[in-house]
Length: 469
Image 1 (cartoon, rainbow, N blue to C red):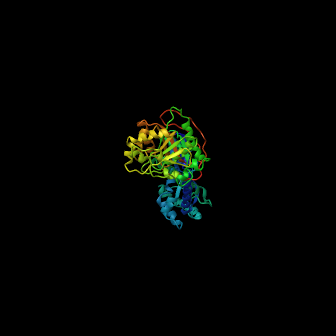
Image 2: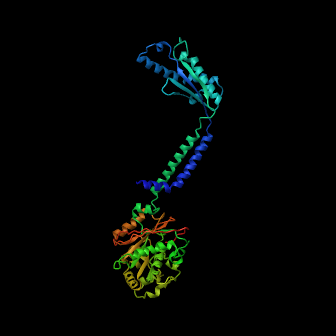
Image 3: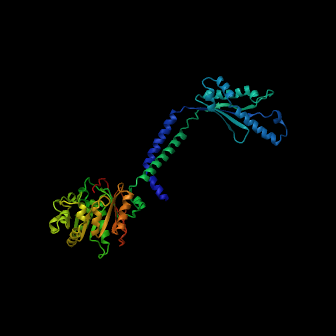
């Protein structure tokens, strides 16, 4: 994975990482508050080796090794149970077990010196305990070292025990930093698992990474709570939202005249991806150039175009498909937009798959080709019903619509694979619902290849309300 993808991942989950970091810091601080404050008293000691064989003027190598082992032995004997029990009995408020847990020794650089450190909740008691351990060892050392003839103590007190006024534990900085680190790792893990199991397309980059190539058009979240209110090319033609649909029209205009498709089916993998709103806005954008456009509602199960344009629903495509001999003109509904007519789904009975799969469909489309410069067909979801697969056999090309945070990678790949397997051309993919406030206008031109074409479109949206099928 490229560094850029890692950075995008961190940017996308920055809010969760920041939230967990704050929570982790709070937990680290709260934990530190619950811990007892410990003070550390240290005394600097050195092992007296000026006795017996250790006092030779010219010690051998074995003598030096014996001196080192002797020093380590003395350090370990300071922490044995008899010494600690005697020391604990000399100071009130502590047991031998507690003293053993709070006592340690450490080297002082590369010297023969070492520190004996005792931690306790009371600063003065920590000092007394450090002195008591040394005194206890000195009282017991002849028995511990099995040397009843020693003339002096094996320990030399270089620096008497003392303790700083500030506690050494809890370490607020360490606890808070460690808690923040654990919380950030946990947040990153949650984000990674969410991205791994959530295959919904998140944005333009994710669309490309998941095999969709570059989207033909990127559309933001449209103003309006209903599909009719989202007819921006008619209600608010000066908006940047409407400009995105005019860029789709520009893509069609770039196709050479002899290759330009006349009958275009607008498809989507699943319901709710903005297919009908896209078809309606594109139809208005085409009609605004003077073309005669017929918008056909072929979603016979759940038609919606009649509500978007507020036209009668009695009589439509299903009626034409169920009755062989009928004139089409009476079923074309006039809209507010000049040159735009809507052929609603109609109200005839029968199974949609049988109506769209029959020979009458090609006859109806042949007549519509004579009546219109462009025929746009709003279809049923491609992966949900068989209706659209039957319909696509009679069209020139398709325009796919997917929505961010709804369409999954599996649905996208399935739709594109189905189009390739059936050798049905696709102008490109419209990416709906992208939350981006500023986007650069760009147009890449047209290629006659049946593969997905691409052009990136600018769009600006301020109020989220993009609904519709």
